[in-house]
Image 1: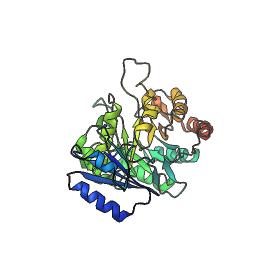
Image 2 (image 1 turned 90 degrees about the horizontal axis):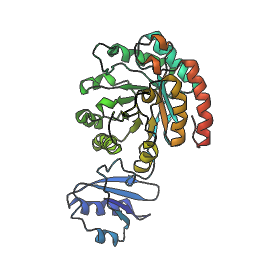
Image 3 (image 1 turned 180 degrees about the vertical axis):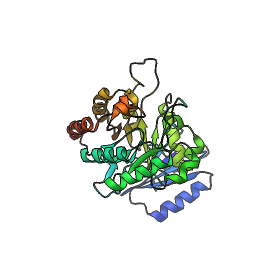
Image 4 (image 1 turned 60 degrees about the horizontal axis):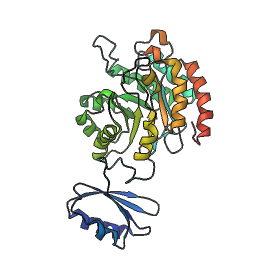
Length: 340
């Protein structure tokens, strides 16, 4: 249930009003705007009298929420959530009119590689550096990442460029190793690893949550709800393609989910055109389409030598092609009223 208080109602009045509601067994989340406060009631609200609330002098509107996700619901939090990280250079933002670009190799392979790519993507205008240290792979014989050494190299690249780090966490036991990581990525295969999501809810680090291979929009939002239920609302949702019957691309990029998510949730939404298509030549077109669909950013794989990449070289852009893409995307972003 969502209760919008009338503009001008004092914090003290709202506190007393909420205390009476809590006596009925619900928990309350507060969203304080510039002139109005919205209360989100979580729990069994069936016994709460809607009519009594609507005639209360402090209440402007009462809405029954049917969706199972509450904290991620735009009804409770009408204003867009924006991820804004401090950096030594330009502000690293996703949302709030900023089209955030996350770029870097699929896997960290060496110091030379990650520092070179980090410098190149920063020069081109990327706001975040991505790179895998721990890699979930379908085959146990594929390159699994450099592990802790890869994290150390990402930190070195961050020191060289100032770009915030985005990298994937695979299990709870690794969390203590991610102290210097700026944004923790939850991969598609871990989207419904609920124990991991709960633990990230107790963290204050931003979470990049990728949609599962065969997950619905509601399941994605419920995964976000797990993190938010623990107190962490710094979440970015990522559409990275879903599994379908066709095989001409690695996955099927579901761009229709972008405007649908923007209507349902206040959380920022980005697109991963690299994993969605699996083909480097298709990444520019899908990146432009992501802007048109209303996305708040993209996460793109860039490698200095794709032909010899240890992971996903076929879908990786070169630094030069990434620079060309960024020049194009600035024009598309401007049309949509966004900046890169």
